[in-house]
Length: 115
Image (tube, rainbow, N blue to C red; front, side):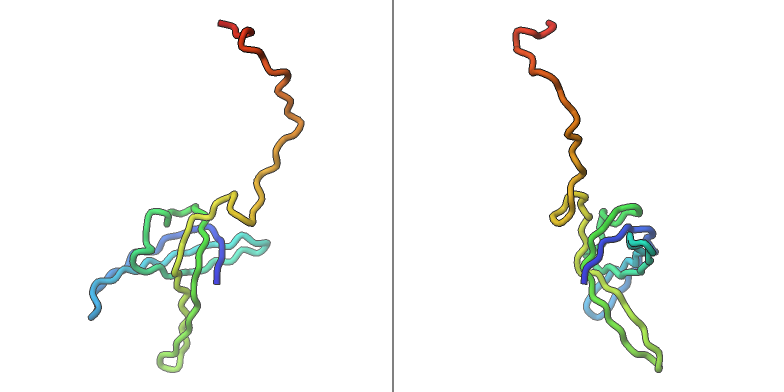
């Protein structure tokens, strides 16, 4: 699954050691840009934690959703597997309109230079 949203909060970095070695986890809160915006907490693991995770950045996030049961209660995780900065002029998005009313006038000849 994929979504584009604005990063609104970085939660504290979590680190630890398991039988497979050291691990890092960063939970982030993003807000969708819809008529009724939704906030979503997403887990980012390992090398996906980087400098583009700055509040205010618009991100394109590919993620998986997984639920698991523990002691007769269900818990759901949203885990990012790819994060990119969302580009305003990315494919599928339109560029801002060009002002066609601007007229620079006739081109000047090199001999008309003021110096």
